[in-house]
View 1 (cartoon, rainbow, N blue to C red):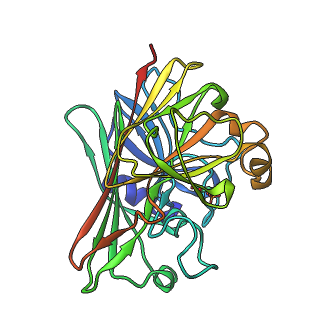
View 2: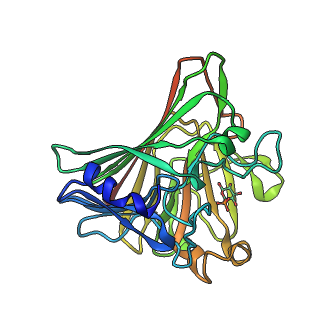
View 3: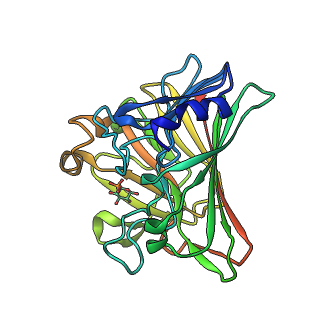
Length: 304
Ligand code: BG6
């Protein structure tokens, strides 16, 4: 999907008062969503939600001020879609971390104005020779994004072939916080986790998660809502999910953020990734003709 497709895209899928398509930064094609409930921007590259803010609220999703926007480059911030594997590929070290879905084009399948005022956009991944070289499995992936008072996203993977396959996936979501040092993350208190900062050692979470250094953890047996309590913004971000039994909590902190080059000097203080995943052993077997649905709902509540 290039900017040359914009007239056709708008003719087919724009809905006044809901969504139109424009050229965004770096020449990326972007869906601009604005309805009575919220605003959002979604890049067709990666079907990547870059921003979302309910009306009269500050942004809930963090987008790095230093993000790079370019064809084939993952955007730092927003809601990257990790698919069809999470983290490093199981056997091929040269395949991209977190899969290829976040850096390839997705096409628009439909746009819809919902009765409650929300806007729903459905995207389908475009698979070609390059993606099939890394993922020959016969499959289809849809990303269904509903922009309203809450942000709901469903990543639907269908096995369109005649053999089962194993899938890893995630919404690698960056949430905006006032100052991560003051925040507490609830809902993971009884979960074991793999500590990627400590050689992948298995540990046990006790109480809420507090972040004051680099944190990179895969929480196992995580099915409950995860809550990010942010006293600075006097709000709680609620992460509800289905089709996922693991969650990743990640903040690169100072040194790692500096090495990445697209975080900026203080970016790490204003973000935390709480990722709803099928990661580590929590991968999914999809039988021939079957499908898997990873679903999340993000909402905010006042913090009392
Ligand atoms: C997290 C991983 O999910 O993503 C981290 O647990 C990784 O190890 C981070 O650094 C960011 O990955 P990327 O590929 O977007 O830089």
